[in-house]
Length: 154
Image (cartoon, rainbow, N blue to C red):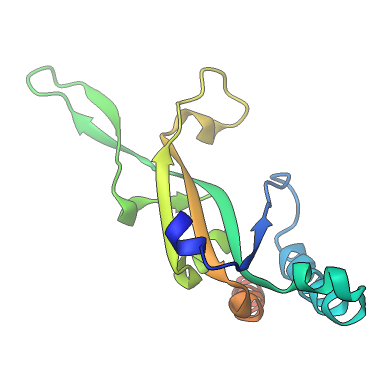
């Protein structure tokens, strides 16, 4: 991570652990507003502060989960749930996560402890914390792809 972010670049952290019931169509609007705010600050802030808004990359932190697969336990005829840990089976909590993964230049993940208490059904599944880095120049592409995807879903 240090090597991927070195070189005196301005790094922005995109924190988006939003409420589960926040409507997805608001996300491109919020991301577009972020882009406009950064552009405004680069032009209108005091010269001393302008450089701090010239963000070259974003670090995005999110979670993913793995659906359970039912397997027969040998010799007992019972069915047991087993969590799969294949990246191809990874599912995202938020619609934009998959698009950001496609735009990312660097990413890694690590497993989270399984929840002992349940706030929602997905808490019982195996989850990873996923860290992705993507160039700020790709923020307009993210907004465009997300808008197109959400338009096709409605």
